[in-house]
Image (cartoon, rainbow, N blue to C red):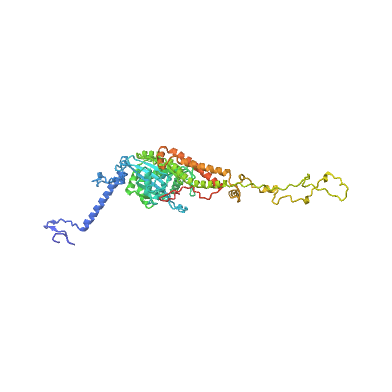
Amino acid sequence: MDKRGEMQPGGKPPAENGDGPVKRRFRWTVGRIIALSLAGVVVAALGFAGLHYYHLMRNPGAAFQTRPVASGTPAASATDPTTAGTAAATPSPTPTLSPYELLQANADYSLMDGIVNVLLVGVDYAPERETWNGKHEYHADVMLLLAVNFKENKVDMISIPRDTYAKIPGVNGKYKINASINCGGGMPEGLPKVCESASWMLGGIPVDYYYAVTMPVVKELVDAIGGVEYDLDVDFTMAGRSYKKGLQYMDGQAVLDYLRVRKNVAQAGDQNRINRQKKMLLALFDACKERNLVVKFPEIVQAFQGKLFTNMSFDQTVALALFAYNLPAERIAMHSMGGTTADIYNWAFVLTDQKKRVELIQEVYGIDVPQEVQYSRGYCMWEWAYMKSGVYLETVEKMEAAMARTLAADAALATPTAMPTPTATPIPTATPAPATTAAPIPTATPTPPPETTGETSTVTQPATLPETTTPNATTPEDATARTDPPQAQTDAPEADRARRDPPSGAGPRFGPEEHALLDQLQTDISRVKQLRSTYGSEKSWAKRAASNGGGMAGKAQELTKAMEEMKAHALALKDRVGYSGSLNWRVKLSYDIAVDFR
């Protein structure tokens, strides 16, 4: 026993005054202090995690309160002052999410007014495309924008056609919006540039978040949720796999094929494919809700790390999953930022209907944005016709000048005196003629000459006649055989070459037809120039497009028709007269970043 009355090893408890046991005093060793401290930290961490999860369940929108705002002002702090001092709150094991709790506004995001934009991107990569000749780039071929409205408890799904002619912010050139990922550096580095381009389509409304997958990952994701029952609306075949219309179970491969099919179906084209993609997305959403898989979205996202690309945090994904859990399918509205397809800028582009675009943004976001008139149908068609006709004129005017010189020089050639066709010398007939009358035959006796008959009054001596033909004479049959047929009756290349390159000393090679073609070509040139001046300088085009875009489209068609006729006449004249100059009918466009649009 030591002096403090503590029990020594192997001893017994000390007695106090010999009347009873002495009270034990606890010894705070270093080991006990560390153990208790760690236990306290664990309890506090669990309490904080439970509180954070409880807060997210009651307000999913809070996960997005730190995102950047459009006005450039600092984002509000994600800390909710009302939760201070509630660390002891016990999370509910089975929280019930009421619509009111899910409608809490995101007040710090003033421009969006409670709306969070999430872009779903499908990249057109697939292993079989590695064998495509020369193609090693992949594009953002599916762009579905989810405008998640926490305040009104709804989602607006806006599709943006992949071939949309759009501005890629920070990049100069005539681009399709699906090339935005290439302009941003490829997959996945270019995904923020895709969001910027989608934001431009919305008139500057920010698109801060994205989820992106390639085609093989779509197949894996669908298989991960167990496939889907779907009423297939088209018969189609993809890579040897055939599908028939009707209600059926579709696994990941079938869903992927359905999302990809665009050609050789009853409802062909990209816009119809977009509509099918939106319907399938809703069917997959319903399947997840029926199987109670919505709450597992965050786990699924984590399971596909490295295959599914996103810039959203885990907390933000949880918030979206909680919001979607109580979202009825009828609260998902489908829209399209569509337009008309036109063959311009050397590709097929979708030209957005600017009026409908403005109306759609007002409907979904309640914000008025201006039309992008320089991307409207009227402006673009006129711009392309103007650019193309400029190239045509440059080519045709050079050809016309050369043709005019050739025909002028040809017309100035002197027409040589026609050489008479050699004819055979006529054979003398029995008709008496001074040159051919035979002299009387003298007799040796004075006896008068015997009486002659009419048959012997004149005689012919064919054997003593001179040669009856000139040395170069030809028979009528030979002359006919050697006469060239009329030029109008043959299109043989040999005849064209003979007309263009006649023997030396011949007269004009070209006739009225060639001169008429030249006159027509000169008229075409004047007509094209006149049409090109319709809207003055390029500075005035945007103003005209804003006020009368439809009229510009009509004039563009008129100009296109005139320049194509000019080209046809130029080629016809070239074939008849000959022209060795180069012919260029293609507009060369400049791009900051070259992109293979296939």
